[in-house]
Length: 255
Image (tube, rainbow, N blue to C red; front, side, top):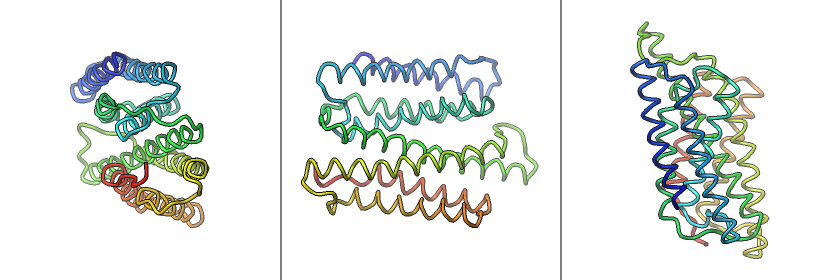
């Protein structure tokens, strides 16, 4: 628990440093991103320490799953920073705060999950999928704000290149869809082993399938006909609302 608590504190400090750099223009070099990496590493230490002591990963209740999803988003953000190399760090304040909140949620987690490896694969792929789709939706929302500022010729303050946001949006949508597909596959295999059948009429599973169909349609339509950037961003943002609704409002009826 100590490592998880330290992770929460460092996420909060990292967010404060991102805020100082973004809003006050203080050159802190890579210190905020290093803080983010340290906080994520501490979460990983906690994650594998629990596995070493219990033989289970700490993803057996909603608290553990939300914590894993938030930290998966942090990992996606760190990778994006390495790939795009500039201006992505402007998202650091938002991402750090998400890391802080979701890791904080993980503190009261008491169930550590199941030994079946496909359950672990299912949870890990779901965490990456939702983290990617959430970050894609955030990119879309920020793109709307930046484009609005550019149209009004008000370019002071927070600005991120529109082309960078478009690349992030498309990459994250595709990554999210791939891992959402794996989530359904691994979940089906685990359900067969645990419940004796591949599918149950569970509200969470049904909504996950609906979200998969939605993103499959969105990505296929974009590849086939090339959606206008504004329309793609709007649909991506609507998808974000669906994902958040699934995470926050809907629970499994079978545990």
